[in-house]
Length: 273
Image 1 (cartoon, helix red, strand yellow):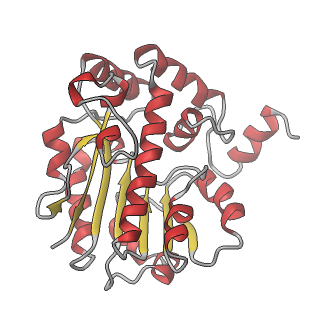
Image 2 (cartoon, one colour; image 1 turned 45 degrees about the horizontal axis):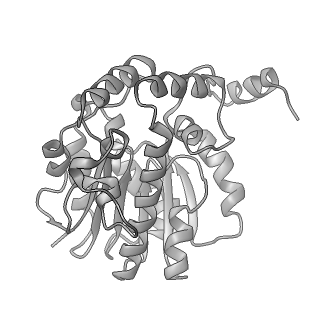
Image 3 (tube, helix red, strand yellow; image 1 turned 120 degrees about the horizontal axis):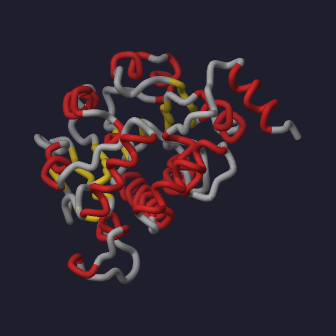
């Protein structure tokens, strides 16, 4: 096995600086994955000082991804555009969707080339799933990519997934416009699936400061700001809520008894009329 310095040189040759944390690899850390480096682990260590439950938060996000994708597949959705997907781990979008419907097509999009490197091996034998290295902030480039259009027919209902990624867009990058551009490109009967860091407590606001200082991104928006992403669409019950409360499959505490970690992220799904 290559040592750390050899790994660093290998990724550096591909234009990747592993001395700085990345969004995808930091998420891999909190999911207890292995595709991360010391800078990513150090960043998560600093966040843990502010929100000790951050590993639980990642699990809540992964669990709602599974519940949401399963719900969408059960509604007849057969195309999933997973934007800012992160590194492949257990219970990925394609595994959940294709368990419900073997003919479901899934495209993962992430701007970290390491995602493509690891995703290719996972998806080598799955011709209905692919990984594309692209920046979701450029919807035209994403939706015009040949690998995307090979699997996604934008004249058919599609799930636009922005799970745990919009909070990494700064306000001046106009995430609202980006969401609207993707949703404008898909027909009636499509769905929007969003989860997002929420400014739900002082600990959350403290975590935002750490994210912005150490990672450079991480906007903790209010429930009202998160709900605005769904404007113009039919927001499904129970609306935009803390992740554990979105159609739970087991017992959960009432909202006023949720912990800081359970309220750190909000999410919801809406249908395009």
